[in-house]
Image (cartoon, rainbow over all chains, first blue to last red):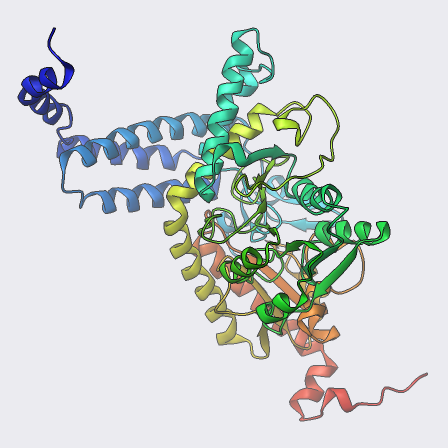
Length: 111
Length: 417
């Protein structure tokens, strides 16, 4: 029976290659598409503060993560971004169901 | 277009929902927190203490996950976190529970004059039972004198309670120094961190904290839930305030409310990730607000230290202007004067009085609370409305006229009619 450490040592080159393939960073077009989806979703929030926050936070996060050098980190950030987009889409719906009739004073014209 | 959207309440008509700048009173629930909570109101509604079916198991797993998230934010072990109904309950358990447990050997409590009402009231309750309490004074900048604290500690001191960030003036106390002194003298250190959690970095080991009160609705979580941190090494024992089925290791009986506990956990996780980003934004917005107001209005005093402050809390006093009338004119901005807990009475805030602020300046204080969702536009609009209202009131104020003419207000002999 092969001992485990020996088996792992033999499989090492295969494991390493598989890992790098799985963690290949997202393509530029994918990232742009996700970013645009975020901005579209943000616009749909009925609440002024949440709308502005989503738009601003997404823009700042994408800008900051642009500098991510290694592929696994970029892939992780992209996956997280996709998950956050799903949360945002659901919440747009929930907020619209309970949107108050009156909007924020900031959205009204200045008297 | 104005008629449908305007709101009429208490005889006042406003054109829309006011700008919310009262983050110390409470914060809006973050949509990511709401998203985490909803499944537990819809399909996963089990009682976490039900041991015999899936509903109980999944509910319990969710509670333990939330417990781990809260612990991670403060550098604690999940076994040291006990869920309660909020920071007020935590403060009651901490103050009364610790002193009652050690009532034979420890008869003395040290706290400050600027603590939250629930801590002060718990101390007063202990005094009625025969314990002794020392209320440490604060300097005019709101910070305690650490040497004075060290001197006040006696062999029979059972607890030192100093809040981390003050809810009215935003001042941050020197937690590490206090923790070090308490550790040296062998006295448990309790801190009410309701306003500090998720806003300033907290590490219970670095700061030598023995007990800590946490609140969810101050960090964009749901109302009605909080947590008590209780150190395991060295173990700090408390007498429970709630008798019952022994939930939460006997410290706090009662069904653990899974949906809001999950919300609290989600809020803590988000706060851990967003702390730096939020802090940068909020500091910049505070500067913007302060500069905006000061450029148009003079005789504005900031209550509390500017260096040791959490940026999201700005408490300002406008000389020669009365606080209530200023607030009545600012109906499109949701701010507060004094704290919500004390606003039922007509007395000026005891916190400002402890700072040594004059009565007239204490009456005129306004607290601006800036948070994660506050925008530049809101800050600019609030500045504009505040400046407009202050100038209007000062124009009508005879005191302001006299002050401008060089008369010393304090030397005036007011005549009786």
